[in-house]
Image (tube, rainbow over all chains, first blue to last red; front, side, top):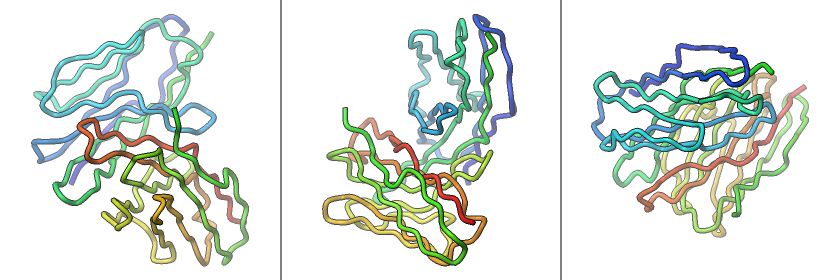
Length: 118
Length: 114
């Protein structure tokens, strides 16, 4: 069975501070995908990034960066110079590609609520 | 770019009533997923369809059923509604055969059972 742990339930930062959201995952499969989704107060789930288990290259997209480390089973997310619009619940998720099953259901962590204070 | 469409966006029902939620996936996507998110909870996988066939089943109550139609839209049917069914229901779609398989979520249907 798969498991995703987001130990930080809530984080508050002052605008322009950097913040890192932690994600630790568990799986026995050697091939898997990791995701981050953002859920703003309006409720929709917005896809941010997808990482394959065989690609440990870190990624930067504007103020967002992701650090994937298989050795520690972690996929952490950093927001640089946070803004009020970053206030949301952030979910880390894992999926296992079962060959032929036609389903890559997502297992989500409990989410981290980020509040950015002006 | 076209996104996943869900209808209705909000729904209020009484206990023991029936509800039908609809999902229209992104064009050319071949897989549809349904998730349930209770208040303050993470989304929980209910069921999925690949090429109009049920492909996986999660924690979906027996009172719920779903199907995917020839035009790839999907419907989640919920009967004998209970107070605990109040939640945000998401539909997501993806293109399984793509090397960049990613689930894109609709805006959700917020169901309130009174």
